[in-house]
Amino acid sequence: MRESWALIRAAWVTAASYRMGMFISLFGLVFVLLPLYFIANALQPTMAHTIAGEAHQYFGFVVLGAVCFSLASICTTALPSAIGGAIGNGTLEAILGTPARLRSICIGLMGYGVLWATLRAVILLTVAIWLGAAVMWRGVPLALGVMALTMLIYTGFGLLLAAIVMLFRTSGPLATVLLTGSMFLGGVYYPTSVIPSFLRDLAAFFPLTYGLRALRQIMLRGDSFHHVAHDVQILALMTTISLSVGTLMFCLALQRARRAGTLSSY
Amino acid sequence: MTLPAGIDAPSAGRPDPRRWRAEALRTISVSLRGITKSYAVRRGWRDAARHPFSAPRNIVIDTLDLDVFESEMFGILGLNGAGKTTLLKMLATFILPDSGSASVAGHDIINNPRAVRAQLAMVTADERSLNWRLSADENMLLFAGLHGINGEQARRLTGQILAKVGLESGGNKIVGAFSSGMRQRLLLARALLSNPRILLLDEPTRSLDPVAAHDFRGLLRNLADEGGVTILLATHNPDEAFAYCDRVVVLHRGGIAALGRASELAARFGRERYRVWTQNREHPAFVALARRGLVEELTPVADLDGGHALECTIPGGEAQAAEVLRRLVESHVVVARFERVSLPLSSLIARIAETHLAAAERGRAHA
Image 1 (cartoon, rainbow over the protein chains, first blue to last red):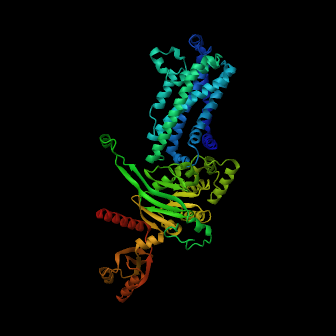
Image 2 (cartoon, rainbow over the protein chains, first blue to last red; image 1 turned 135 degrees about the horizontal axis):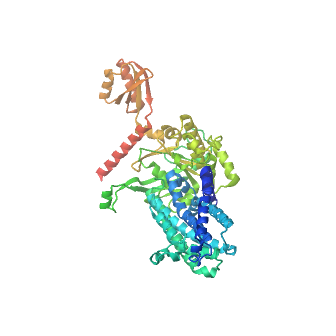
Image 3 (tube, rainbow over the protein chains, first blue to last red; image 1 turned 135 degrees about the vertical axis):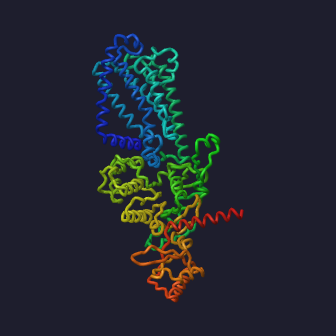
């Protein structure tokens, strides 16, 4: 893991050299949270019945949705954008020229983005709790497990997108389709139960549907593992498939780039 | 195993009493057997649509067999597109060969690339591979980490190596503010971090001023002589090829056009080129000598230092050169100076390439 930390550290030092960017990234959370707080409170009477299966309070419901979605987004986009950036600025070949394991390099390249997004998520949740979001603390360990599974699934998607970037220098609209689909069909701002039935079948393909539902039931309703076991099983299956396919495709793409001699071409 | 062609042990002209170097020059460090690499030729949309699975390929390296010995400074010469960079990148495991095998420090580049990467480092003239937003120290620490060196050891190594390449005072400066020469030195420093047994360098002195380039070459020579590092150096620079490399290979169309000591190649392929300083460049004696075949390729040289000169090729070595001078004097040509000039590397490579091409065509015609 030394190799991963070296890359994460370098990314941190680089990011820290853009002080204004860092300040805006943290200060901008205010502009995410405050509108959510006021709108959620205003909609609480009308949404209470709709979200009853997953939460009692709409503010907590929507904050958890936003946090989970932001983490899923970063897991999807961090590696492809890091690989694309490294190809563009010419560092990829130099990094791959070291004896570091490919796994460590991938973790290192996406690590800073994920850690920074996690820090932002923790700050967002802390302020949300301070503003009155009701959280069941005993569910935190299980919730972390569910969150980890959800993030791993999207990391698998990220590996797949990174493979496409390695081959074609762009992932096209795939990331947008995946993330927009997850946002609108995965239940970020409303439960999937309100989605029209013909779209609900489509929602079943998005991991966020299961991840968010399980997270909310654990964190906002205090449900036990027994209640979310089915969702967790589906998440575990999706994690296995997503990471296996993503890893395989990434390795094949790297092999193809080495064969074509295009590792450093941009 | 015998010594490689063109190598005396220890190498002549440089006092090197160490016996281990002679021993090292008997140990193969880099070995290529039948290595071939081709790239698909980029086609237009229409052609690609008509024949999607029959893309023509351009052969860059063609069944290459080559051995480079431990502690050897080995030059790779050739015209642009001869396959120099592709060869180095294959050894660095950035590019996979189509066929053949190669080993670096005993490790196969296809089956064991991680072990190969642990043994070698590549320095390109591509400054983009540095992180420009980080300081020199941070760039070094990043790559130290990628080589599994962390903490105090990484910092100590960073300081030592930056001092070795003359960047001790620039450690805190961001690379974006560096000059090209400083970046080049940082690239070398980065490569030295892992204490590699083999260094691959692709035109490393391209952005350096003459003094820095001289120091840089001296540093490389020292790494080979004292550190036992095998150095493969792709270059267009005659100084590097003639004065610093133990042997050179001239690549042409992916194959070996010539291999040996640079001075030997110059003697074998260069033929003797002479410069005659005279006020009588138009004297009929020159034309007469050319008609008799004693001199070839007579070329007036732009006036140098206020004098007038002619350059010519005199085949047949020093005896024939003496004969030419005698005849000029007998013809009352006032010769102020008569000197042998070294053939420029570009002309030497072009001549070797021509010879290689002609030999290949003769072989084809014979077949």
